[in-house]
Image: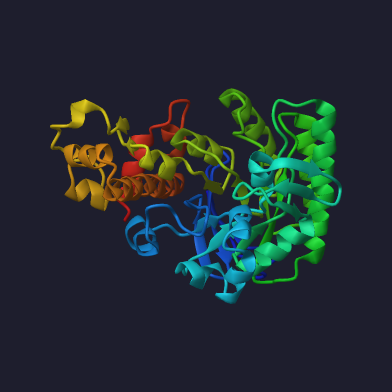
Length: 388
């Protein structure tokens, strides 16, 4: 089914739906930002502190062909400080990245990393993970920080509650997140930044539905699903995602926060998700766990010490075209910086190729067959690499 719906106002309608898969909720589109368009579904490499670890912006854009990256509000607020980034002209010139950037609100990190935190209606008081100093972030403060950072897409400040948790707490948390979302929208004034609302509610269907309805009634140019992949069973996460995603407006971009494995991405696309981020490809790369079209390779394994074949013979990335498993193992065992660089390049190339392959499969009508209960990740990645 070929669909082209063009929206003229980037702030209110930043999404163009291009193609809808007839058998699933998967779709292909374009996300319009001040820094340029982004093809969706898309994976966003995570640049927590204003850098994607072990990867230069040039490699990200030219070799990996990443279209958008994510940076972390909490960490950049603590160091170097959002005012320094503002003085530099914003994150784009500060980090030398000229394509779109998304910043999270800092909410997840405040709740997962903050020490001795105190949550009130006004916001959250917490202690820095760097030096123990006390800080306060409110919805207004989060928007102020993200305005200074200058990302193309910013997120409303939310509470990401720990799971499992009592229903009453999840309900109160979700309702406070809605009030915080309204405060974020009220103070956000930068028309060059798209402010997304975040849906919470734990694993409770009625709370997820209420959160969607409340967030949509406030009105945002895009919507995110938060509070998943925080320790719950995979089947429960999938069930909650499959229930929540279709409730979101079809004409707006949908973002699943912090998820996940290649299989998670395929499942999310089936449910109609457009945007993903996760530290997995870069973190796994530094730990020597590498994604290939035939499965995970743990490069430290001694069986690779005399393996002079490419990491992945099907892969077109610089790492696979120029180096052997034996050499990559040597770098990893010796803790050489080059190992982390080559592994990161490969894993991100794998993820970006997967998403490109998913887009091609949706448009070709083959996505549903490749994304069944045991998705053919290798075939989707190869399809994406053949399109480079």
